[in-house]
Every structure is written in C-alpha cells, then in structure tokens.
Amino acid sequence: MAQNTDTVETYDVTTIREDISDLLKSISPTETPIFSMCKQRKAGNTYVEFAEIDLAAASSSNQVAEGEASPANDAGTLPIRKGTYTEIADKVVEVSTTDEAVNGVANAQTLAQQIAFKTKEIKRDLESSISANKSSDAGSANGAGARVTAGLPAWLTSNVSRGTGGANPTLSGGTPNAGATDGTQRSISETMLASVVASCWENGADPTNIVCGSFVKQAISGFSGNASKQYDYSNSPAGQRAIVAGFSVYESDFGTLTVMPSRFSRGRDCFVLDPEHLHIATLQPLTQKPLARTGHSERRLISTEMGFYAYEKANGIIADCSTS
Image (cartoon, rainbow, N blue to C red):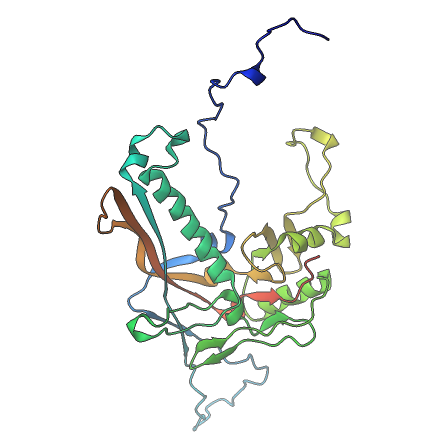
C-alpha cells in the first residue's frame, strides 16, 4: 500500500541502537569422550613408563605325578616396559587495557573470558592429540623440536581390523615409533565390530565403549541386528510416537557397549575401548600464568603437559572405515 509523504521509516534512521544479545553462545563443541574416560595419574618425568604383563597361556596338560622329585622350572612371568613422552600444549592471550574497559557483548573481549575460551580450546586440542595416529617423539634440545605423546592408534596391534594394505604401528624399546599404516577404506560391518570386541575379550579385557566419527556412528545404527531390539519409549517427550533412528548401545556377546560419537577422532577410526586401561599422566597441570606486560596490555600463558598411553590388548580398533 502507499504511505503518506515524509513518513519516517527505519530505513531512514541511522541512530537505531544495535540489537546484540548479551547472552554469549558458542556452537563449538567441547565434548572429549576419550580424554574424559581416561584414568588420571601424576607423571614424574617427561618419559612416562608403565609395565604390561601377560600370563602364560592356559594349559590343559599341566598334570604332574604325585611325589615328583625334580619338577622343572617354568619360564618367569615378567612384565614388559613400555613408555611414551609427554607433550606441552599452550595458548597465549593478550588483551589491551582498553578492551578491559569497554562495554562489550557479554564481555567476551575481557582477559577473563579469553582465558576461559583458550582453556576450552586446549581441552579440544588434547582430545584431538590422543586420538591422532601419531608416534611418540622425544623432541630436540634448544627448542628445535617439541616432544610428542603417542596417539591411541599407535598403541593398538592385537585387537584390530584393517583394510587392504593397512599395517599395525611399530614400537621401538616399548615406545611407539611409527603410527599405523592406513589401508583401503571400506564400510564398517557388524561382523568387523563383533570380531574386534571378541578379540578384546579373549585377551582379558572388558570393553565398555565404542568411539567413532559421525558417519560410522550412523552406520552402526543401521546394523540389521538393531531392528529386532526392544526399547522403552515411555520417557520420550513424544511417548509411543517416538521414532528412534539411532542406537547408542551395542549389545555384544561379551557385554554391553556404549556407542559414543566423537568430533575429534579420525572419521576412519572406530575404537573399542576399556576405560580401565586408558591413561593420562600429567606432568604439569593446566594453569594460567602472567607473562611480561607489554605497555597497555596484559598477556597470559595457559598451558599443560601430559602423556597418554593405552594397554594395547585391552583396547581395539576397526580401522580404515569409510567416511562417506
């Protein structure tokens, strides 16, 4: 419709205040499934060591005659020493005194808020690091190279399913010195998953978690066995009308496992995990410290140092999964 002459519209006004919500929201995810399930301990050195021990295979012929005079010695049951290096993660933030003084949206520009954001970013970095297919590295003197802790895929050699051309990681002196070799990607199947879970169980583990990327999580939800499972929808907001397209519990022949999607592990890796045998050893806990002031601004260093290791026979991987 036509409007009267000289009607003032919002299009004509240049002094309208901005409408910016003071409720600051971030869509960036901060869930860290593997890091959060790890056992925590204190490290005492930049090289973190632990011992793995395998009992002798069970024998059905361990029978001796009554009164045997000279029983033979059995091989000793001795632990194997393994280890990895710690790595340092940090974030540095610098905020001007003017930024501290102005009235910003949710005060996101302030030093305190920036420290909070960087702390969350380090948490995400640590999850990504321990999920990565990378070997351990001692680093170099004089700042020439950083120490690196081995990622989960670099520990797993027993309970594995790999694509064509894929190969296990290697260890030197008990320390992962090469990550796994990626093979040809293939679609994950229930047979692959069941086989790795069974292998973990046969090696003495009781895995309780499956951690995988979004595509593999959807593939697991599509396993044919899920069609016959019964669920209680009584607590659903939609009641009996609920449509369940995904499954978060996998009932294996060797126990129930929770299926957890991860945004920070490689999409091609699907882990079968026993949290009792995943460890974070912290040498320097997460702290924030002031750095030398530079004029009209303040700097803070947020940092931590930790090492990650996994008992390899207690955990497994279905590697080289398709991601599209």
